[in-house]
Image (cartoon, rainbow, N blue to C red; front, side):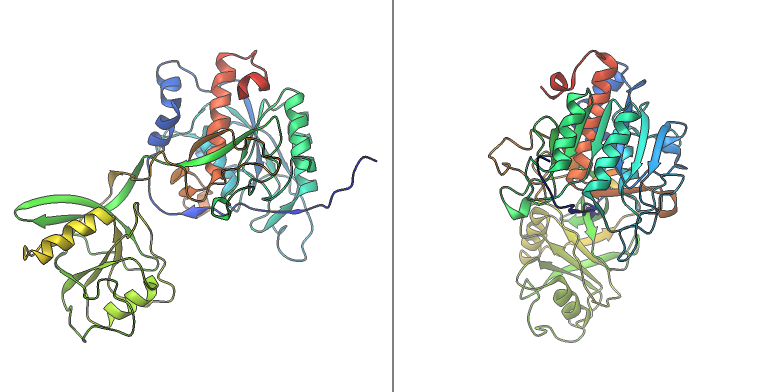
Length: 434
């Protein structure tokens, strides 16, 4: 016996919902669009194993391309008191695995959705139930099965933060690489915890550990600002929960005083009747702001950020009947200046969605673990789009969803590896990593 390790619990990575980006912009960020359109690379003939929550076997994005599958756990596993009860089909009821696989190589002509390597073959290895966690020993079994099934690439958007490169899941991942398998792993979503938060198995010496950067574009709902005879369109994110704005509704803009709308309600009843009220993020919760303005008769709440980027306000238990939307800091400052100059701007809520540049596009996502490892090793080695990624989701949950996480970054690297292996099948995993 060389060593004894505890069998740790490995949580299903927490992802962030919201936004509506084009997958095309994410594929374009990596250069995969050039590989597809100019070089004709699709990943055909390459097998990619997805160790995750399974894949939706009925989803058109994966039709006819799941060549191997194994369920290690069953639906109920992960809930307190439940033990593994493997199913015959590694179907996905949680959504995480389908989203990851869609990024690697989903292909749905009906919706024009296309992942990085749209003709790869898949191996689906289910280690999560519908919710909850898995365990390290189950992950080891899945790695062994993926190797036995002849996977060329294995993606694990899974990990346990604050681990060491000596932990068995990391050692097994290294063993896969030594035996000719390219392994991509998410670095983890513990960026706000600081250094040394990168997890196993991404700490393994020979795997490709992937951090996340934000997508460059977003499809968003929009409003039109009318100011001094000119009209400009601005994207917004809707609060949760918040009623949808009425399409075509035009409202006069006024600015709240105090601007943060905090404290014991500083406004008079019906002070803002029929008006859209401009406020700024900060000093108190979104819920407090919502309740104060709802009691003052606001027809809509328009909050601008106090930092760069978009934010989706979480309104807690606020019970409001008017829309609560969030816009960029620069857009809010522009409207505020116009109101204070007596220009009487109005806003009109538009139908449908439009594409907007993401101010944080191409920069490290705030949730992304960034290293170094506990032994001061260079982890993660590279980054890929992981913030605001649109991909496949179980059909019973809508078919597609937008999620953020390093879980979304690692499959971009897995798909890229598949394209490279199609072009240069002689590449070793070490050469791929280089």
